[in-house]
Amino acid sequence: MCWACSGTRSSIPPAARYCWTARQSSTSFSLPRAADSGERDEPMLNEILSSARTAWEGLQERLFFLPPFPDELDSLALFSMLLVVGLLVGEWLRAKLGWPKVIGYVLAGTLFGPSLLGWISIEALAQIRPMADAALGLLMLEIGRRLDLRWLGENRDLLRATLGEITLSFTAIFLFAWGVVGLMAAWAAAAAAVTMASAPAVVLLTVEESNAQGQVSERIILHTALSAAASFVVFAVVVGVVHAQYSDDWLNAVAHPLWVVVGSVMIAWLMALLARLVAALLPKRSLAQVFILVATALLAVGTARMLAVPVFLTLFLMGVILSFSDQERTLSYTNLPEGHWLLAIILFVVVGASLPWQDFTWLIGLQAIGLLIVRAVAKVAALAWAGGDLGVARRVLVGIGIQPLSATAVFMAYEIAGLYPEIGRSSLSLPLFAAAIMELAGPALCRFAVVRAGETAATDNSKEGVA
Image (tube, rainbow, N blue to C red):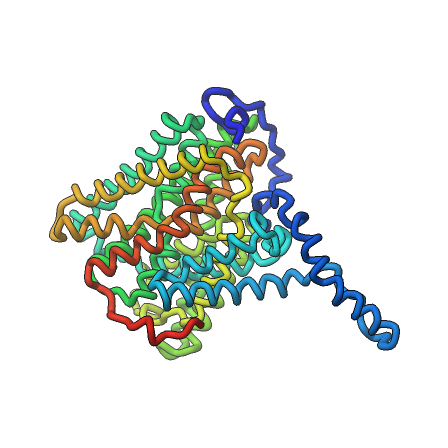
């Protein structure tokens, strides 16, 4: 990586001029370049399919209705095959090694994505982005619904621990990115905003997969939800800071954060209101209520995409609003169907394929590991020192359990990098590679925490199938 052009303090990059009206909306996914990996694999694929092409062309001479032999496999077919591979790898790791399934999904996406084998192209990933948004949105909705603000207000020790963890994590990461790595203040703040929070989707799925119940598990989910909320606020502020650093028009620095926050709140409030009004007409805990909850969430995803508002923030706020405003308990006992695991496969396969491994260097790898160490120490120390009715050992387990860093970090990084692509891509490589490492280590750490706390149901993996 050339840090001279990456937004470091040591060399101020050339002035980046960015046309606001030309900025890509959130309906497009700014993925890393494929580093010609797809081009390298095309000759290999053509060689494998050459005999089939010859036979097909021979048949065409007699069967005139046959279509021309495809020059390349259909992107949807390839992606479907990737999902099957991701499912099998995740189930195998779970059954044989006891690893969280999420790791298998990410590994499959990384292996077959643009950065490595290139079997799934950037264009195919862009086409599948709406499904990934829907998957992340539904998981963020569920995290938001589990955020009990009343319980937090009544538990001062828990509130102190939360504020300490959020503040110390952001400060430590910012100082590391700015003072050690040498990023400019704006991009160091962006790196801290992206990596300060835990990964809500990973934490939720890992806790559910482990059948974990208890104080440690509940606090892991609560701290994850709160740190995600804090990171979203910081994210909006950082968007303005980046604009102030590089845009000639100060209006961008003010209007864009307001657009992000106000737009997300308005969409979330309207969709939550619609969900409650319609669900009130239906039997509680019925399949119809589940359908309404999912349908309004997908409507929120589509509306957020149209208005270039972050999907993860909108759906999280929708969940919080539903949890806080549903006084009649209309949807309180309506849960997402088990099918959200299928969406999780899509989400983490896409995230794994989106990681820019072709830009990896040993320097950025060591810097990413350093950031993760600083982040881990900050989180564990903040919770260990917070005090409260939970023992120190169990508070440390909570700190370990909130280490995952995944989909939201990747999506936030690309969202910010898309503002000024000439500078943002290289400047945000640090948090992206930190997320890439924690894609694999994070679920294992979360599972270790809930297992060590003794809050998981015993399972016999030897009796489970591969799929």
